Length: 353
Figure 1 (spheres, rainbow, N blue to C red):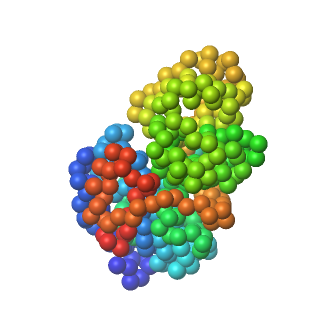
Figure 2 (cartoon, helix red, strand yellow):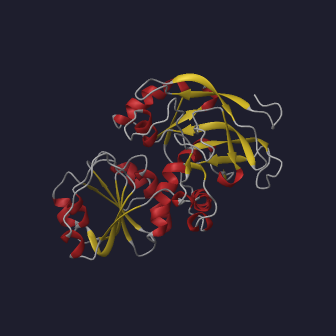
Figure 3 (cartoon, helix red, strand yellow):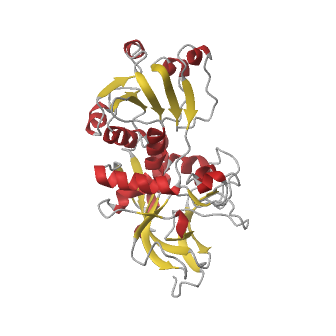
């Protein structure tokens, strides 16, 4: 524990010693607080599908032992001598990254996720001093104040946790491609990302359609704010919806029939990918040419936009549907995510660690 905020903090964590290994409870040392650092007492940490890809070594370049977690919600425990934005006791969050150069055009415009020097991820990354970063499956974390966001009082702190990744991953492209009144938006997938995207698109004023493999999530999609729901396993869906949408947000990690989905776009429509399948997608270029359509991707959002997203969620009552689990249930939770057996995001109660 940290008796003086200048001391190095030893903290309990859940880590995987190697790819595909089960989780172990171990300890790590967090760095001594620098003048602009904040020590956060983590209360909840969400499980993202990317945690699983990394822990299994599926994306390569894994740094082991690994402490995953980039959906971090907690309370400020101590602050460095020059911190001005937060005080002890504030409810705060940390998302997908914890540092950037702060000098390039993208950092200066508030889009640190595209830092030209390379953004420092919350875990499975090397900081600019060459030290590995460790994530939120942990009791404590030290983060520079510029990469910490404030959790509004009206947001339940456990529910806020998945917004730090799932929330900003969907809010950012919906805002960028101007989802709003008069726009027809389709959300592909009714899962951890999709059910949050529906809520944001609805709150922005768009007409929202959900495209999911079967009809078994229709009621929940409508409760989240969808106006329409179609099963993509029904071949008539693609005929009925041809040329309808201004924007399609693809939240699934499986390969799709890209040409079929492009056919659902209006002239100048865009298919935006935030799900990342392991294998490359294929499409015919005429699916783009004949409708002046676009395929795009989006990578979370910057710190300023993440704060905007949290404030928007609080204002509009947007809340991920979560299942809170104990620290000793994480291995089981990973297996359940791979079976799509979760409604819709797991969140670890760090007090059980």
